[in-house]
Image (cartoon, rainbow, N blue to C red; front, side, top):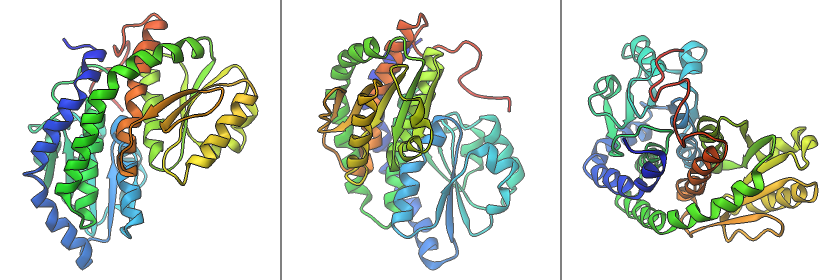
Length: 345
């Protein structure tokens, strides 16, 4: 069985397979674009759980910026508390790598065709794929440990989906994402070496924070999730502005933090936050294009379009989660209590 490190390394090829497969799938998205333009569809709701939930934010923000009303709602919340939002003029995008997690199955059952479903899944034979009006199939391959290649393949698929719904050039979007896959292949070995320094500096911290803004919140949420799953250590993904509103009070040497620089809008705020946390003794790693913050461990990303930043931001975090879990005495990526597919609410 492939381990966490194996699955991390398989991501570039998994991305290429997914993008190649999407070349024949995107024609089906033209209908949804036309219905949004015509007004028979008025909104898009993205829904998933775990890493599949985190991966929704970049696409949702792109749609909002392009004038399409859209929301991200966890599947459990949608199922039990916000189902009235799902109407016949809603395109419901359900994301589940297995296509058979418990909330997904129950949503399919209660929806009973009240709204069209667009599925993103890694399993063509899953109940989700069979129930959907349109299925965008990832070709990540089997994944046994915490989310790595299914997460980045979801991000790539969402990139193509958002481009199509906005009326953009999906062929160009696939080329951009393909270039990001090539960059991932070059940089993954670099990150595997660099995280050794981060693990040494973060060792002994009481908690690990992942702080971001905008689309990079996907990286903060997923980073915290896979750190908790793999290393069994407290970690939290938080909107960086919210950290200023109270949590900043706990900043000292007990705190370790990854700060994602994000896009140019977020960058000055994130650099300022990094400086302030370092001055108070926090252990900080900064992740971003041209990262260069004095006193931090700077994790430099290759230059890619803003829309694809989350796809590359998570790569060093995958290697950190694997290395840190081993440091904590656990087998990287292996679960103690849960299973890969969640079947109990």
